[in-house]
Image 1: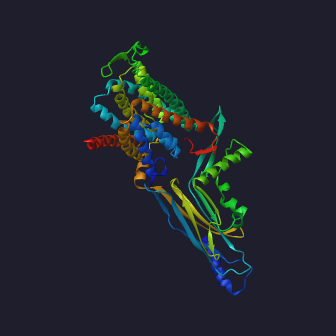
Image 2: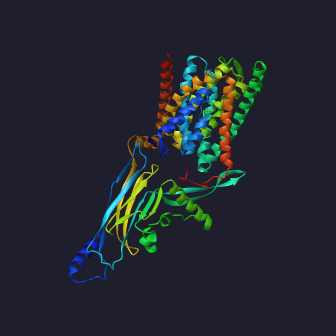
Image 3: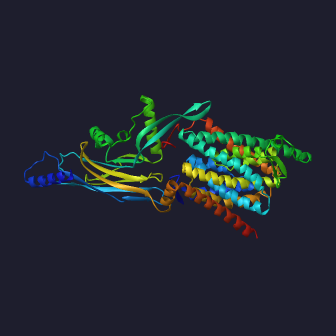
Length: 304
Length: 261
């Protein structure tokens, strides 16, 4: 069943997109991540222009993270104040990211920038997660309980202190602002929600309790992805609603299956599998950058 | 031009009493397309244009008359194209050199009744900009010689691979030197705009008569509406995209809560 995408200006098989959205949805339900980091490279691989893939992906993230945040809202595991501070940083970051994206697009290096960002961040995050999960798996085998680190770090000594009741924290607003800013840039140029960077940062850098981390991150991602979508739509005109809707429909169905599958696996095993998946995507992109491509030439419209 | 040909035809008919076997018969091409309007709708997956026609002449060609040839071509709107070439930099492949082709047709399909230069002469080709090399415009080139050629070749190769450029010698079926037809596939990624369809009737490489028609390609329905909205009301479009996503997210959340109960 072919469907024409009005902004990407190409015809794709609707079932392929539903399937892709669904498969990534299963993974996102399984691991509790948005899955943007998998979907964007896959979309580019099936021929969607990178600019359209990234922007429509941001739109899809609005839907998936919103349906996630609703569940956390009911369970009251959202730190709204922390979310808003992260968002404030995120908005500036996103604005800068979209501007950077337009600049790099004019230079003809979008694909390179997106690939490099993916290789670096997936490599770092996947590597850290792999080490972490292996360590936990090993300690558990020895029978010792996993250590929880919640120390007073540099984040507690900076000025502009705020009280975050749900997170049981009294820290400076500067670290969450900086984290938000950084994630905002990533969201705009990689078409990801940024959960895979923000969740570890919230746990290890800010010392937030794990119970509120996912809900707060989803809350911030929903708003930030919405803002990014708006910026891409307005400045680059690259949001394809038809593409986004197909991905959303596949994604929400897949996510439910993934969540049920995830309930049967243990946390460390899940983290190990996710780390392996992230590293695999990273390796594939890295190889593509290094191996001599079949076609050295590419065409584009001027200014794109 | 056509009036002149008709006049000549009438004159030739009047003069048919005298045996004037040395001059070739006066010929005209009559052609039509199976569609003059292509709508890009939600289910659009490429289409086909069928060009057909006949050669009208004042008398039957004798054995001494050379055979006629037919060239059928369809070209889409021209636009500048940026061609980039990757090169290895610090171990990875990066777009390095680039050239701007001043004008390249977004779609170009040509079919001839015989081998290309048997059907139309080099002079006629140049004058009427028939072949692809005379259709592409590449003036402000920074590179010279082979490098320049490589960029031009890349445009042709990449667009032929994606079905946007079609070159089909013997693609015109010419029956008894009178009836002809040609079929062109237009892929799903064609751009909007006026497309021109041309039929050239040739004898010994010289163009005897020509036919020209226009095909309008335009998005229609939802596709049209979304595309215009994204361009002209981009902020509204962005807000709409977010609303759609929020409603979808809410619907999914509610649907599964209801299913779990």
